[in-house]
Structure formats: structure tokens, C-alpha cells
Length: 353
Image (tube, rainbow, N blue to C red; front, side, top):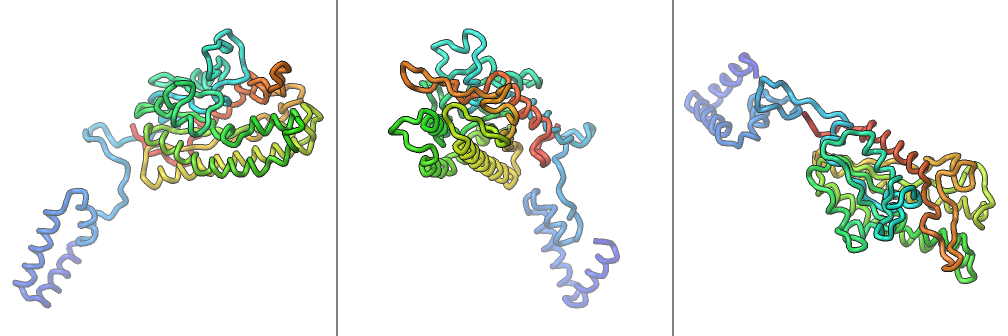
């Protein structure tokens, strides 16, 4: 409030209330201003005196000589702590076995040397290192409760975690079973596309459970950037391949189900990030669209990034690596994750240095 406005306001009070009444009003205003909590003073000044109404900016340093705080870049926010990779077989590295430990019997989660997580860890300098805890066969439930006697994956992240990557949802949707039924064509397996009702039911369950997983991760690592990977389609959309006993129509149908799953995951990630923004949190939840990530390198192509069907004829079942990425496929997933880490969530992060 300017001096002229202040004088006019006081003059108006004297005319209406008299000198004594105007003095009492001023004393009351001063009592309010001096007794409210400090966090409310800007609002009081703004309402009573017309000053202090500017929008609140980033927090300032306690030492004024150090200057104002600087907002962290996406890469700085992602690398200031520890990187942890969670999720299912598409994060553990299932299907890409290069060294002996990749195939070791004790490696029940099939964490391999070719997981995209290792390439991400080599690309960025994480201040507190990195760890791979994804487990083949994991579902949303086992991320929260553990698998093969291991602690819950979500317990592997904590306040010092700055980047989390996770792929989850494929096993909840039952894609392995669906693919097996489409490929093996056993008399009791039914038609491939007749499984649509079962998939819809499973996805409805996942739509309810996935938000809880993301919220648990962000609660334990409130400053982390959580990068959620979608799944690549397995079959070409430009041409059909007469392969693995799957008709072209079934390939197109399976691609469509993969797209639906990706959209479900994308929405869950967006909703989780919206909750962080609403609460003015420090972290983020970001979705990586991998649906077309293997374009030109699908099953049956000249240079596939994903394995086709490999059947154990003795047990008459699909081998674990069937329809999982090759080493080249995991390198491609690493490229997509790296691109997202560099790009950021598409909004400012509430982190400063």
C-alpha cells in the first residue's frame, strides 16, 4: 500500500470512527499481524496492506551469500542417489544368457548380464551406485510381497534412491499363458482369440493393483524419478509372418492386446505423477512407450530383437526365454530408458541444488 493510499485510508477511518475509533482499529490490525504464525504473514500483508502478494518461488538458501537455489536438471535429479531396477522378466534380462551365472540354478529370478539396467548403470554416474532386483515371473503382487523367498522388491528402494525403472503388468495380464495357448494349439487350449474375456478380467484387476505398486515405490523413494516401461509388440504390423503356428490374424490380435496393456500402464503412470504434482512432491512417475521399440525386429524378422517360440518337447512346454528380448533387444530397451532419463518428465522437478 502506497503512502498516499495509507493516508487516505487513515483519514477515512477518522471521519467514520473518530480519532479514538481509528486508533483502536489500527491496534487490532497490529495485534493480528504480530500474533499469526510466520508462514501466514505474507497472506496477511497481502490482504491488509496490499503488499507481499508475489507468487512464492523456490526455497532460498539459509546463507544469503550463496545465492538462490538452482533447479536440478532431469539427469542431475536421476543420478544424485542410487539407481534400482525393479519389475518382471523384461527388466531382469530373461532370454539373454551370455555368461555362466546367467543360467545358474540359484539364479531363480533369471537376472542376467544383458538386462537393460546394466547399460543404464554404465551410461550415467549414479552417486550411490545401482542394483538390479527385477525377477522373472513377477506380478504387481509379488513386487509388494516378494518372490522365491526374496524380500519384496519395493523394499529395495529408500529415501536415497534417485532413479527407479520398472516393467510390470505382463504376467498380471497372463500374456505367457495366452501366447502358449495361441502357439501350442492343444485340443483343450481353445481358440487363441477366445481368451479375450480372460485377458479383460485380468487387466481390470491390474488397473486396480498397479496404482498401489507405484504409490508404494514413490512413498519409499519420494525424490526418485520412477520410469515405467511399457512392452514392445512381438509381431510386425506391416506384414504378417507365418511362424510359430500363430496365424496372421492371431498376431494382429495379440499386438492389439499388447497395445491395450501399454495404455493401461501409461494411464496408471500419468495418474501417479498427477498425484505427486498435486502434493508438490519432489519425484516423478514417467512412462516409456516401448510398443514400437522393436519395429523391424519383431519375431520372424531377419534380425529379431525378441525370441520366437522354443518348446521343451519332453515337458511339452515353452522355454522361459520364448518371446523375451535378445541381447540386442535389451540394448534397445536401454536406449529408450536412457532417452527418457535425459528428457525428463516433461515438467519441472521440485528439486534444487
